[in-house]
Amino acid sequence: MKKITENKLLIMLIPLSLILLAVCTAGLYGKKSAEYVDDGRYYGDIRFSVSPGYYDTPFYLSIYAPTDEIYYTLDGSDPDRSSMRYTGPIYIYDATEDPNRLSMRTDVSAFYDESTRELYRDTHWAVGDDAPVYVSPGYNIDKCTVVRAVYYDRDGNEKGIATGSFFVGDGNDGENAVKKISVIADPSELFDYERGIYVSGKLRDDFFASITDENREEMLDSHWPANYTQKGRDWERRAFIQIFDDGEMTLSQQAGIRIKGEGSREYCPKSLNLYARREYDGNTVIHTESNIRDCHDVLTLYAGGEDIFLKMKDPLMAELCSDMGFATLDFEPCEAYINGEYWGCYFLSDKYDEKYVEKKYGVDDDNVMIIKNNDPGESMPGDFEQYMEDMEFISTADMTSEENYGKACELLDMDGFIDYMAAEIYIARWSDWPTGNIALWRSREKEQGEYGDCRWRFMLYDVNWGGLTYDQGDATRDTIVSTREPSPVFDNLFNNPEFKETFINRLMSMRDNEFAPDMVAERIDGYVSVMEAPMKKYYRRFFGTDAARFYEEAEKLKLFFRERYDYIPVMIEDNFGKQ
Image (cartoon, rainbow, N blue to C red; front, side, top):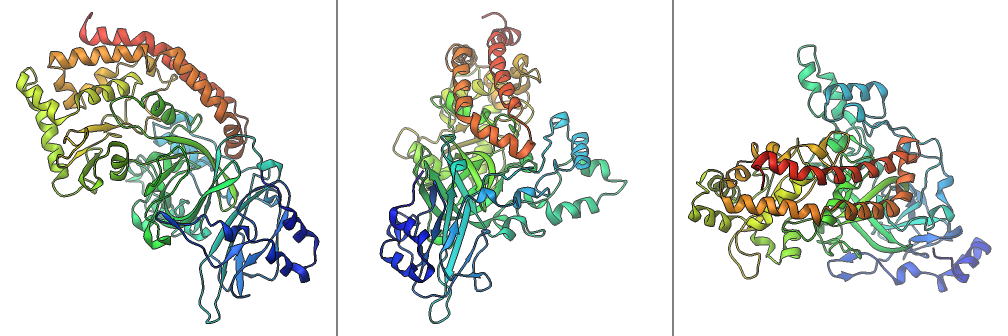
């Protein structure tokens, strides 16, 4: 962590009447702005005397602006003339000492209230007895101080907001190697009863009010509506994102935030999508200095989906499959803070979109079509029709014909498709796959390069539920059978001897290579070593327990791969006879 320089320590000792002396020796934040406009940096005209980041000891923070009409907030809200007037340096200390505020809310999930939790268990078979039992923290959780400041010029015009996240004290030292991400938003944008995106809110109350004796069973069996289940631009809110790596701020930028996911929206913490938009601060991309591919217009703060007790399945599979013939995401562990309060263990991840394809495969983003879950969604006119036409041919044509199979290979990257299907089947994906959680892309028109060939290619995502689960018997689940019926493309291709032989060989190859039990166990142990400190903090914050279950789930995942290794040849023989 950084220590306050000699000049800054002086500020702590001198009276306010001499504070102007510090102007000559401070102003570090003004010298190194971390706000971006596309590929260039700009300098704001309001600044802090100390850069946002980690500090060993408390200090005084000065705010500099062209006028003395400065206002600031400490709760993440947008400052204005109704906020605190700045009259002198602000004492910045270890904010963990402050009472918990946002973390005491219980309207952010159905699983805080016992009666609601039991009702959810009774009506949602996929959750069953494994619904999380959330508790409000009975101790002071980790915090940072969030300062937001604005000034008014001599004509009375409000000028740009300066924002900083300051972590102070040993409690925020390097107890783990993961990054910290500070999400700062006006509290009403997140927690307001009517428009807050992070709470059950008015929409949940309206839903329960609409239940009658006649419709009760049907209503409760669905995903319950809530503010946090809403999607689209109307439910995007403006926020400020700051990322810290080893105490140094590597990103400070405005972004739009939305809740991400399907069933996982009921859990806490929730995944967030972060959108760069010109309307917020002039940016069209998010500039990150990390292992995630740079310059995305969208990034994801991924909370693990339904994998709430381990948070390992998606990043582990992305790593194990990274060299296969389909797309995978990058995941980088981090801890998140919302308006200064610790908000759990996350992964910073990229997101599948046209920009992702352009960066990874070199295909012009304007020439990329993406289809998710067999849904036309926001696809361009003609894209979904092209997809359906191609899949219809592969699903119905006589694949014993060499000509037809050759055409199928022109429409579909067959080696990549076999990799994708073999990997999903190996990890025993079922229930919400392959009927959902599928995504694929192709170039709309042919262009130069290996991937501009108008062939469909698949994208792996959302493997956090319905597979990789030892307790549910997934290790001995025949997922060839459960996959063929709902996937007519996959099923029909088995009529071609070359496809069948290649698929069987690839499944066996994965058994001894990418998914070899000893190698996978080493990867799991590696994840545990990196994640155990963040997960201990996460378990205490949200469940009020130690992290014993985290270690148990990791061991079960190892057992899954060991038993799956033995079952793969059995599954192949059951479906295709001895090979």
